[in-house]
Amino acid sequence: MSYFAVAAARGPRDWTVSELDLGRPTDLSDVEEVADLLRDVDADAAVSLLFVEVDDEYLAILRLDDGEDLRVFGSDAAFVDESPLGAVLLGEEDRPDPIELPDSDDEYEQTEELSGNPDDIEPIGDPDLLTDLGVPGRKLVELCAGEGLLPSDVTTEICTVLGCGDAVEELR
Image (cartoon, rainbow, N blue to C red; front, side, top):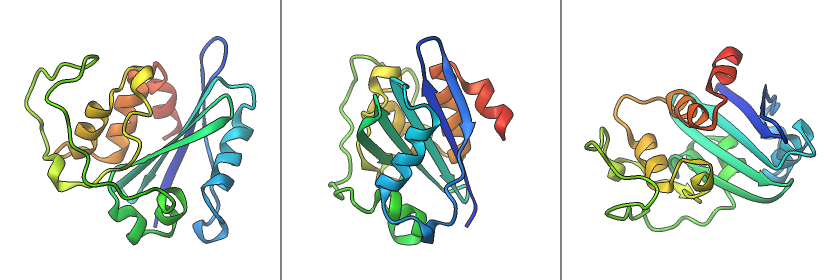
């Protein structure tokens, strides 16, 4: 299993981006341990995000607001069953019924047909964790379901919206 983990922390002026070493997934006890690693990136950050891409197949996003209120999202619930890292990051999340996408979203109007089928994946966690940052839940799920899109493509798209896409790409 290979993974890439990148943290983006928004300070008073801009985003700070850094690669985060999670160690071996079997050494992690739970998602709170990962959240502590994220807190260490910038303890004073208003918003801290962690993007974890695994095996060009799965994406998990963790969010902390002011170092508290951990929220998580996973591109597919299968990640929990197929990866020890997925079990750590998303194992405590309730497995909801497949996320029902509304016909429209106030902040995001669909201008083109979906390039993927949201029925092919089973997102887990909170798809709205990036809505206030410009990526509504509907768009996040659509990106994860996008045909031909890898988790790295989704991370890049999101970070571009946030204004730190170039910094993330430099870390790759």
